[in-house]
Image 1: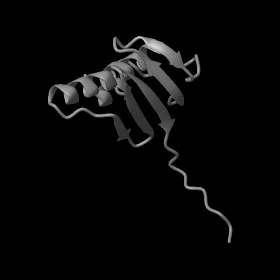
Image 2: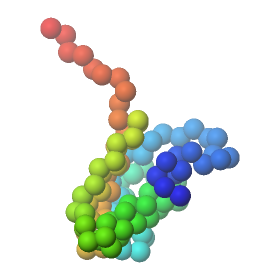
Image 3: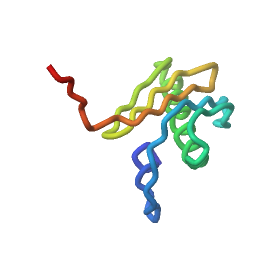
Image 4: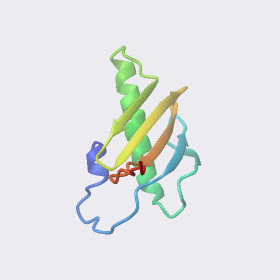
Length: 103
């Protein structure tokens, strides 16, 4: 499915806020802990976690193990660190508005 498919599913016309927080998952993709608000769909968090774990597994299978990865989308940054088969995933929206400081 890929990461881009997570945010552009057909029939998913509802608008929701981008997730903010941290998700910890075990090697099977089960959520261990989350600081993402509970109103964000758990299924979406699981899909993100499964994609991140798949990337770590594929890199390990190619003898190029990753310890950390960062993906920047137009409005969302996903940073993940591998932890003994599981992962800790940091989700943070990217602000498109630059704040200027007065001189």
